Structures are given as C-alpha cells and as structure tokens.
Image 1 (spheres, rainbow, N blue to C red):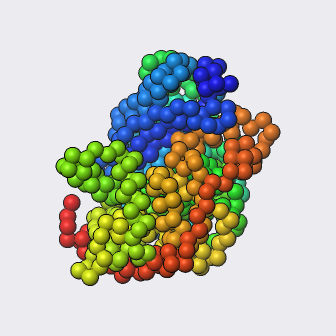
Image 2 (cartoon, one colour; image 1 turned 120 degrees about the vertical axis):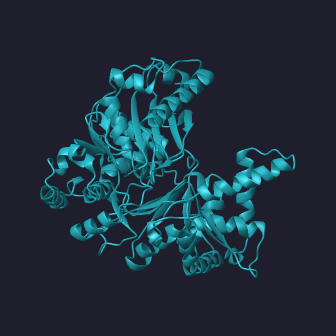
Image 3 (cartoon, one colour; image 1 turned 30 degrees about the vertical axis):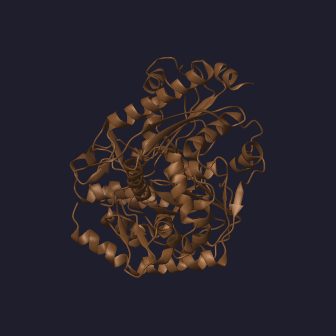
Length: 530
C-alpha cells in the first residue's frame, strides 16, 4: 500500500511525544516507517522559582503539533487524517501534576525542579532505595513537608503523559515505565512496590490526609495492554478541525525514557541506550538487581516491566545550542547564510580534529542544577587557563564532552563497581544527528562501542508510535523485545563505532579536570545570582 492509501484506509499509527523543547508527532505506516511528521516548539518557564509549563501551553502545543502534522499530510498526500489504527502519547517523565476533578491544584512542576531535596532524602532512607529529586513521590512528599494547602484536596496525581491520555480517553492509567518514575515498581508484579506504598501510607495517615497513595495514582499497565479509546471530546482536543474520528485505540502512555528504549531496540536484558537531547539519560536493562542503592542511579523499568538502571542528567545540549546560535549570529554578521543542519554539522565535525583531552578546556553545561554532581542549581560555564590549547576544535570538543560528562560519572558505577555486562548500547537524540561525531564522543566516554541507527533522529515520538503498533498489530503475541527484533528492526543493529585507546584516555583526562574544577561551578552558583 502507498502511504496515501494507508492514511485513507485508517491504517496509519500516530505517536506524539512532549519533549522539553519540542512536541513532535510521527505518523507511521504498516511497516513501522515514518510517513509524516509535525512539531511544535515550546519552552518551560521559571515561575515563582519553579520550572513549569502551563495547562494552556500543553493544549495549544498539542493542537499546533497535530495541525502541523495534518498540514504535512495534506501537502504530501492530498488526504485528510480521519481514522487511525492506534495512537500513543508520551512525555518527559516524573514531575508533579496534582488534580481535584479536572482542575490542576498547582502549576505543573517538571522534572527539572530540584526543590525536593529533603523529601527525596527522607524517602530514600525510608525505602532503602534511591528516590530521585524529580520523581513524583518526592514532589508529593515535599509538598506535604512544606504544609502546602492543596495537598488535602488531591484526588489524582499523574505525569504529563498520563494527564494528556486521561483527558483524551477518560482513563487514569500509565505505562509501567512512566509509572516507575512516580514511585518504584516491583519488576515481579509490574506495578507499584507494595511495601513502599504501605510505608508511604503510614506517612499519609500520620499527617491526617484523607487519601491513601493508590487512591490517587494512575493504574500501571504493561506494554500492549488495553488503555482505552479516543473519546469524541478527546478527538476534538487533539484535532480542532474536527476531521479525526473517535474510537481509536490508545496505548498505555509512556515516559520519554521508555520510548527511547523502544526506538533504539533496547528493552531486552543486557542492552542499553543513551538518549541525548535537552537532557540526557542512559538506560541499561539489568539481568538482576544491583547490590545496593546508589544516589547516582535511578531504578526504573522498560515498558514491559524489566528492571533498568538509569543515569539521568538534567542538562545536555542546551548550552551547545546557545553557542551555535552565537556562531550563527557571527556568520550572519559576515553575510554568510547557513541552515541549521549545515551549521551544526560544520561545528560538530571540527570537534573531531580537537585534542583527545580538549587541550585542557572544560565546559559545564549546567542550565539548571545537576543532582548527580551535587549541584542544586546551575550556571553555564566555560573554563580555561592561559596555557590551554584554545582553538575552535578543542572548544567544540569540550562542549560535546561536557554534554555527556555527568552521564559517564553514573555509568562508571555500573561498569566498574557493579560489573554490569552489556551486549549493545545504542544512541539516539539530537546529540547524534551529525553522523559519527556524538557517537565517537560517547564511545570514548563509556569505553564501549556505540551503535546509532538511521532512525536516531526520530526519537521518542517514533518510539511511542511503535508501542501503539505493538498494542494493535502484535498478532503473534510476541514479547515486546521479540516484536522489536523480528517485526520492527528485523536484525538492523545500526552502525557501530568503537573508541580508540587514545580517545578513552583523553576523555578520562578531561573528566579528571572536570571533577577537580566542579568547585568553580559551585562558586558560580553561590556568587552569580539569577
């Protein structure tokens, strides 16, 4: 079937992901290949000291993204989208969206906020389990500790993906991967850990709150399970033109970590992936539990419930983007016009000519705080001494190294202390868009071959579309890992690059300088106020 026929006959599948700076829609055909895309650019706002997106921005962004997809389909295929085989929604994980009825009680608090330190520390001790600052349970308990008035009124707590799904289907559910970023999930039962839930309920009772935790959390669902259908109201919330028909199956909503695993075929044990964009995180699917909790490692699950060690970094490419914008302005000052792809490609490729240790230059890309290195707030900072080799190649290489420096710190625990074995690590996201460059940098950082597929730039929107396809097209009842291996990727493992000993040694020298000079970043936070 042609792409036009797939759309006309309602056999296309739609995936939409809410990223930190872009909402992206991908329409795929029966062979799981993208046939149309749409997007909307947005940005979080710092309001009263907390990072947020307004409810109005969420819905305007979703509708504008879908309208952009619809326009693309009309231009390419001269056909309207009226029916779809399935839909999936995903979004940045964690954060805090408490509701009473349909009304949000406080502005959405995103994963980027680091105001939950006391709560996370107390819960980590209570559960004997690392509870990160950004997890929903940390936000809830911090609100309780801070005696916030709204807490007593909560009747539903969810994530961004769970919120959108609820509003368009009426179902208060969440994919198990996203659920595992609210409160830990038991990989055996594939739902919220009963022991931890019971301990938290004791805290709620002691505070005299009128609910128990499971009363307000969405139901956790496995990949492929029935998560509801697009309602008439939901169809209009998505497509304001009124062409999209209700009744379409919608798969369990997932977080961006889960969709990244799917998009890189990394849900099987002993596989891993690195997602590198506005933020970065690595996901290594474990064969067994770690020997003890680690503050740098978050334990989440794949969309089908396998245990995953996650290293999450709040910052990745935002500072690089800011510097590229400066170079663009300079080029325009000289009368040189370059499109974004060419500009990034040229600047990324020059980094390959830099010294393996960046000539001593260091970049701290801390747009916001970075809990892995103990920074509760951040200031973007470039550091050099008079004797360093300050040239464009080293400058760009330092920024590319800096974007994944924190990621390496967390993974060193997995590989060096826990001796975790991995057969394949795949990269995806904007960091890898320029061929070879980001891939080679990450290989040096992790001292491991890194694979990148042609679909590396498709990202999470494609990943959630694949999960939607799995929910409706898995006629052979395959596991998610087998479905991806046999149906979606069919043996395609992408292109792999292994690091040279010189590159590994160079990155390690860079990282030693990076760790030694973290006090400079802390001083910038202490003395340069926002």
